[in-house]
Amino acid sequence: VNTGRVLAMQGGFSYQHSVFNRATQATRQPGSSFKPFVYAAALDSGFSPATIVVDAPIEIDTPQGIWRPKNASNQFYGPAPLRTGIERSRNLMTVRLAEEIGMETVADYAERFGVYDDMQPFLSNALGSQETTLFRMVAAYAMFANGGERVEPTLVDRVQDRWGRTVYRHDQRKCKDCQIASLNPEFSPRIVSNRDRVMDAITAYQLTSMMQGVVDQGTASRTVNLPVPTAGKTGTTNDSKDVWFVGFTSNIVAGCYIGYDRPRSLGSRASGGGMCGPVFDRFMERATTKYGGGPFEVPEGGFFVKIDRFTGAQMPADAEGEFVVSEYMRAGQDTLYGFGNVLDGGFAMGSNLNLFTRGDGDVTAVKEVTTSTGQKVIVPEKANFGTLSSGGLY
Figure 1 (tube, one colour):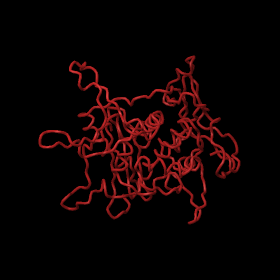
Figure 2 (tube, one colour):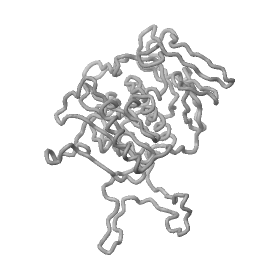
Figure 3 (spheres, one colour):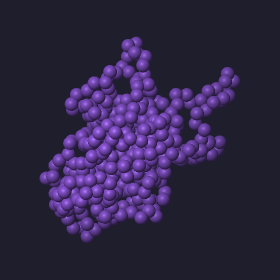
Figure 4 (cartoon, one colour):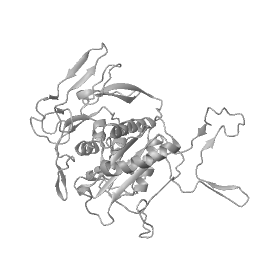
């Protein structure tokens, strides 16, 4: 992710059968693997990983008629933090978020990252309905892993003439310490970056942390299990015609796309996590053995806060457990936590909507949290906060 060097690429299973490179030439819908760019735009617009967005039915009037987006499960789950929206790949939350920040802003981010040259600002494109290539998606994800700095992929590191003089070098960063003969071998030389910044460093880390949740307890948790910190996002299109997974460690980014040349369903149960997840895991297991990996670098200018994973409420500093997550917040940003931080306005919603459920269709689980005094507190499995008015919470 630092150099842009392409380590490996496979464009099909047989070059003799077809010279068409599906990694660089096949344009397909990225599906939910596009969602991180919506969340990146939101985080840069003042939202935080703890911002609450309501997951509930919506109807959108389009020139083609009423569009009713759905979650993959055909269910909805009420208010949840942004982190949950990306971990569980919630379509309704993503559409509401895109509507709030504006699709023009989302399109600007997608073009800035090189996913598209010209993205159409339609709400459906927030769910990855506009086609792109795997090569573009992997290159864009590399900028997340690189702390928000632009990385241009390359197959050529440098070109030298017959006398050994370098006439072209892809990586233009400067090494401040490489000429020091007595450099301490325990320390890496300092590299001065002159690259353009496409997103704020804190935003990049917040998004990376949220995408780690996709791998740790989200839609890729059953199939991606590497020995180093890993972040990524699954993608599955309508009728499961295309499945994706793009992910990264601290120093390598990789992507997988599976689909037919003449698009047709891969099967009713096909998904990015189920099909591309194992491919990514197997490849990256070899890659991390050779190239290693470590924790993602935390930028300056922020602080960590313990947050309730389901409500977004701030927890005591010593709280721990599977329902507690440590979020990195921007210093100086006025952040509200919990249900006081719910977006208001926009879409009409029905009455007597349960605002809170514990999990994706399983409401039997309860939450146990350790407070600062060491006391175990049990939160009930479900809470009904009454009626939502038309045009209210979202």
